[in-house]
Image 1 (tube, rainbow, N blue to C red):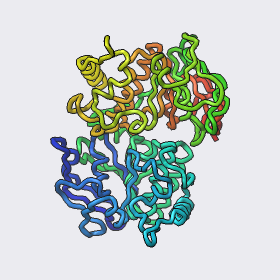
Image 2: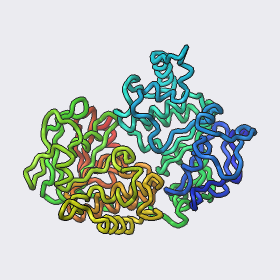
Image 3: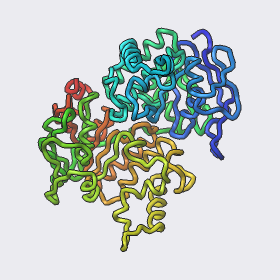
Image 4: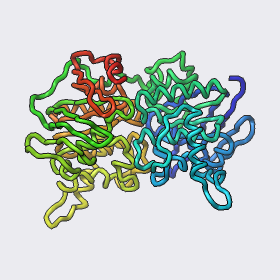
Length: 500
């Protein structure tokens, strides 16, 4: 690492009264992979967005290769070979893959006012092949794709400018095990080419293994920088939160513990091109885990059980009422909750208030005589949940879009816990949250377990399902491969053998 490719001095950024970045000093060298660590709301994404030209600093300076750098937009940053993959999804759902890859730069494929989709797709295919990325159907609309596939499309877009600096904001938690390995290999390739990368990840152990150095932010300020090979996860977490942090936030017991009562029975469930002949029971007080590689079908399980998918065969039956669940309305009315992986587009009303988001799943219970919902009851529910979950917001009228990822996820999960649930479906519940919020979510899961709520936990994080599940269903190519109980073969090695 001979010379700095990016230098930042005294960078400040405010959003209203909130100081998101305060006097940031930062250096990135050629061929360096640098981690950015910090709790949700510590200013990591804000710093990255200024480097990427999404936001402009209030004060301070940036230099790229010794020249002053003041990007006016992401396209301006692209022109200077700096690209970013956002934490939240950055694809346009009603456009196909090829156009999304070259979004904002379609002019290079246009002649005499006509755009050549064939030329765009050819260039996109070459790009996916060059960088070793799994290629999706190039003519398919991205809005119909899984969040993991959309993230890979964003990565392809970032690489399409042949970048000198790549900024990755929480990409790994959207990827399954095999695509994470692909990303790790890509980072090694970029490093060998002398390119520089800044990585944000809430998986501190992963960040240490991937990076050369780690800069830690707390409350918008840099509180330290460490050499990755010379630090530990606990040291990083301590710097992040400003105190000693207990990393043992998974379940302490080593045995499956749940009631005999079957809450939900799934038999021969089949969804065209997604699931094939899936059968399982989930019991009161049980956390039933699902894991697998990309395209294994684990995320389709949650949608199908909640009635969101068109089922070709089989049944999802609520045992106590001997009722088949065929739609989300039925699921909602029968005390089933669903927290999807993509919270911003599939769960939260992102531009609505904290109050309205907390209230939405409980509107049936809050509706009084005459079909009216009392504003007082909405306010009471939201205030109770904000206090219980320690949601950091200005007040309950604040838009959810302005909250950090961790606080969004607290609302996403907590609004279901405000109901009298029988079954809770969690799809990657800790995606994009820091270690403190992650520990809190696990404590809520244990509280639900103690209250005899049945939980289906779907996750791309092996450590998460191994740490929390009573039983684990391993899937491959849309089929169940093996059921592993907490008290037998419950190791990462045993699960990976089945997955692969």
